[in-house]
Image 1: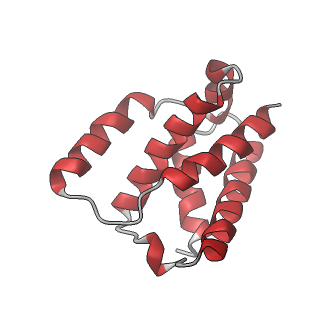
Image 2: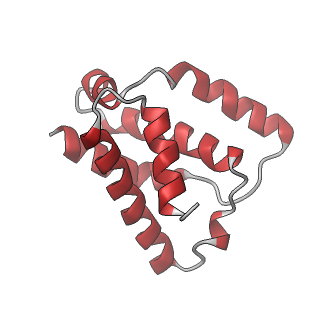
Length: 122
């Protein structure tokens, strides 16, 4: 159940990640939005979500957006077609699932950041 929730919600979160640079004000708001959820581990997010995929999507989406912003990534530089973006999503989901499977007590933000990094070959 835990892996199913993570996989399906990460897919949705990956779709929410913006493909453009943020203005400073928007970036500051993104940081403020992400700070309250940075304490989650792979295990604690699944426990607190208790099957609520929208909750997990929101948390992973905030973390992924922050990672992409901090790394100054434009997704369009890595995938411009729907097929390429679908492949990135699948790769991201696999990396996130592997990271959480390896250490369920890992901070989710770190797992998300590593998944972004490995997905994009950084």
